[in-house]
Picture 1 (tube, rainbow, N blue to C red):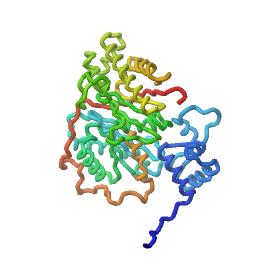
Picture 2: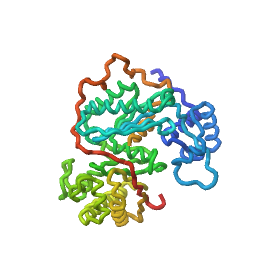
Picture 3: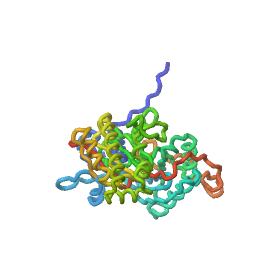
Picture 4: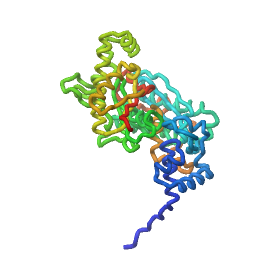
Length: 421
């Protein structure tokens, strides 16, 4: 039998270049010392490789004023030179399709936000109309970015879907196909609670931490598990669904069909109904005024959240938990009982104070290249007169059953760490 021809092995230098580029792609920016530590390379090797990548234009050194933002812990002494991918390598767009709002963002290869926007979207809006709305927002952002956007190609589009939508295969497939046809770039879709967790790792409160549990409390309760810097889906694609952990088998019914789930005790509609308040600002106002009923409801929710988080941290052994969502607007009324419950069940825990998650999904996908020659050849941007599935009057993609009022607001986050992490 004839021997199969073997592929030529990449040289060590080529492998190291790919490692450096991959790390900058995932992390956004790093010093040469950071690269050496993360990749296990010597100082001389990193210096030689980065010098060549800078000369080639693949990597750019950042001004110290640029590098000062979001680089983690404060350093003592002169700040090191930070490096990032050349922002002109391409643009990535992210969209968050929530029940009552659609948000979009455009980010460059260096992880800098070029433009972003958010618009209300009534819960009764058809799925076709939601997709058209999302496409229009992305087009608007690309135009808003000016000549800088026009000179750079859109490399990919990431889309965050609600848990209800992402569980319907025909909706996921139909959405991907329609958006790929519209923008002629690869499209990746995912659960928006998980993408919010990934965004916290790349840009937010968990940046620089490889192992994180993210939980978002709003009309629903969802989450994400990031281990070794990678978002984990689990065998049934349900990793991070802490909202459906049972706290009391005899508790209130949950929309998942079970009883006593964390979500059935801590979702926003549940809290409003139990406190007799019409909306979240009213619940916050009642809590601030010392309303006994409101205080009891919020404190009970915080205690149950703390209990569930303590169990999850014990099992996963993660050093950090990031909490997001609308309920964070309740501030210390909610967080104080969370702290107390964590202290009761964990060893000396402490608590301190998403559309971009869809972009993080793209940046973590090595199949989406930043090289101009790698643009998919089979995806053609529609021209005038061509059939665009996102044009008005196109055949309808079935819409999933949606729960009106569902919104995932991650404007604020709370960061839970164990000492020494």
